[in-house]
Image 1: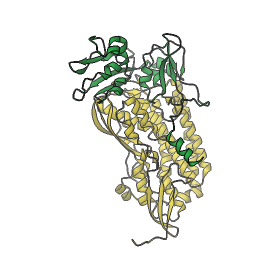
Image 2: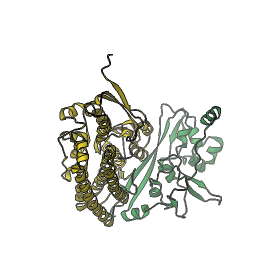
Image 3: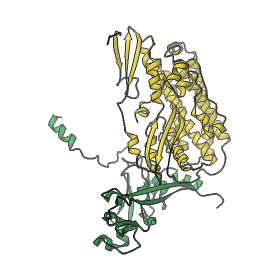
Image 4: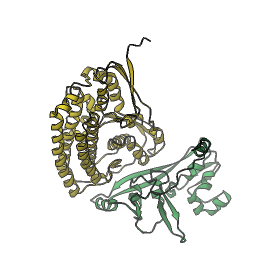
Length: 361
Length: 193
């Protein structure tokens, strides 16, 4: 094969800005990147194989441990799939509390994603400020569920603990803080010339390209595609949820969209606490035989569980499809080629919020 | 480290000892209430080998021992214990407030095609041994009070409700034809009742 490039530059698997190991191979012509390829497979856990033959109370904890950052959504989608299999219904209060935990988890995930972007473009000050907000959110998650990560809050037919009015007031107060601080750092990000220059017009993916590569989550919504599994979820529909969309499709749009979604989550949480119905938090019900597929919106995009269970609810077959694989591929194919500097490769990669732990399971 | 020594350590490595690191916070902890050794905490635990219920030196007394190095702090053992032997954080307070509890059922399934009626499971079953000591000593029994025994050349389950879900039968079966399901149901006391 004729070599058309100057140099092939590998980034990773060990690199200061990578949270998880992954190798990006860039083919460059001078400083310009012509093509890129992402190599995965450094941290395969084989978690789906461990899940086989176990009942829900064991698989639930394994499912949470697929990804440490978005653990609540894995619990959420797994339990909803099991409920769909066996026709277990959830009381209203429990359904609202599930969404409350999920939105808190989404906020902390988006905040850490934006932290890593700011860290990548060497603006660590904003990054550390964002981590500070994230700590507040994590504390609220702990008040609600009893744990900061891997909460194990959602069980078939309901949730595990019911927050009293004191806990809800505390969450409500914390949301005011989070909103104020997020708006402040969002303004900094929006108006800071160094940050704006560093992010606008870099790593552009058009709407057609995003559709072609099936990008999901904030990465797709920043390109103008209205895709969000939350709009199909009955509880979110009752909360009048509508997805946020931006049209620029560059790094700036992806980061700003995440900031906007944090604010949207704040609004959702306020609505939930204001309209939280009284009643039971567990409806009861055991898991039975069946096979089904169910989707949910993880912070990074669409998360799908396909489960086949036996008579007593043991998992026979399970396959998890996580959102990051789409976004990583979109990143390698469309965002990275065309950037004018190798230094922007990592920024474009991190702006798509890749989660290698999810991808390799 | 010299290479031969390294190879020796690598291949002859033993499982990490169940030590508790000093920085761990002490929960779940024992409340001092009497344990009835129903083993439900052991059966519900998602982390292998994190909790075991053992006999103490006092005759007739049992207590759960938690290996905090293996524990994942899920709190299921605290929630399921009917005697409130264990406690962690606000779990008991919350459960008492909300009236939430969990219920266990155990189901035994025998595959009639692959079961060859060897009776390994019936002899191994610890509950069977307590009900009919003859079964443990001689391997045969005519009692219908046992959980299961070999009847007409095949393992037959008589009393599924007596099963404690320990899966000893499952481990002993040479053809993998017996399966124990641990069915957990999270429930809440209804306000009307």
